[in-house]
Image (cartoon, rainbow, N blue to C red; front, top):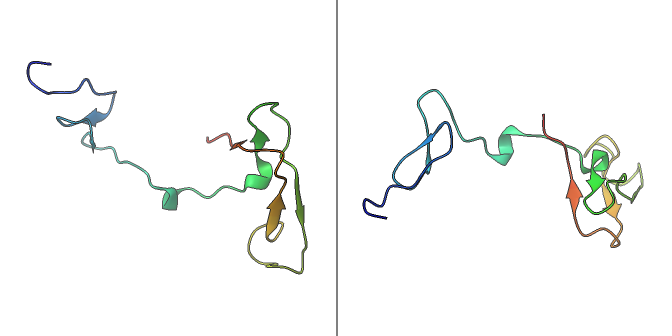
Length: 80
């Protein structure tokens, strides 16, 4: 409160905790590639529901372009 310095997490620095520490970086979504087809529903932790047509955007992802069910509002992916 007195200095304006935020309490930063490990490997994060700066007055507003918005900079990576020396030797670290903030990955962007461009660094990661995941398939939502491998995800789980947030509420029940069950595989996501989707449909796909191999002829529609066939080289887009491993299953092509997929359509997700409206019954699931969120999908979780384990990031390792």
